Length: 248
Image (tube, rainbow, N blue to C red; front, side, top):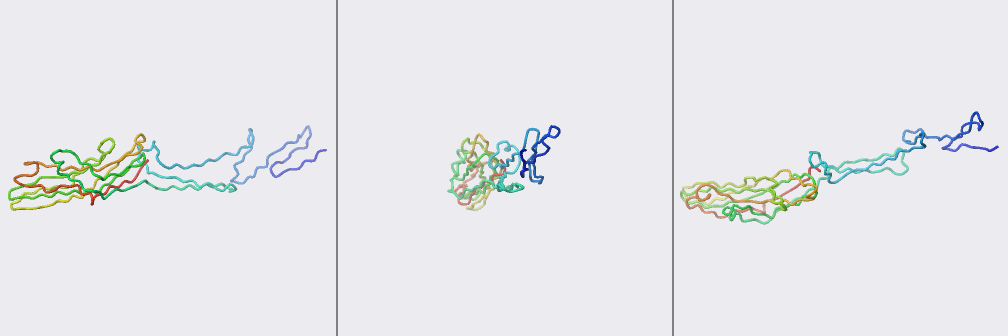
């Protein structure tokens, strides 16, 4: 008669008779970490796949969620239970430009044309960015007795590729004086230029640039009764532009 022995994983049950046939049964460790189960279709051990996501997620651009990178550390092959360590990191893309060269704004008053500056940054991937500029402009003018000035500068942010205005104009420097004596005076205008800029998946990236303009109003287009404009500049050495990605 054949001799049978149980193994660690298979037990033989029954008497090998017509009334009680011999059958093999799996011995399944009942430890909580054991996922093996005997099913009508056979032994089943569910497969576990854990992955993290990082980088642009186009479906999220339209909402206000924060950008998060998720890192998953798998367990060693023999670990029981198999614990996966999941860590989330706030790692926004960011950058800064400045200082840059100055730009003469005097021609823009008569041409009514915005002047390009060298202050620009490239937003590197699809998403939403907080762009913040600390921009400085200057107006210097001389007034004689009875003369007056009414001049101002503005700054804005544009998409270099399309020319689209990304951040609307902000008033910077205002030079508005009347005088009963000869007067030489300069006004400086440190200006905050900040707001949210979106880069679409179709765009991929976007370069944005600061522009500036000088305008005048009233008699003499801002220079009345002998007032003289000495200079009007975008002051690049005191200007900076920063971006931080805030959402995918």
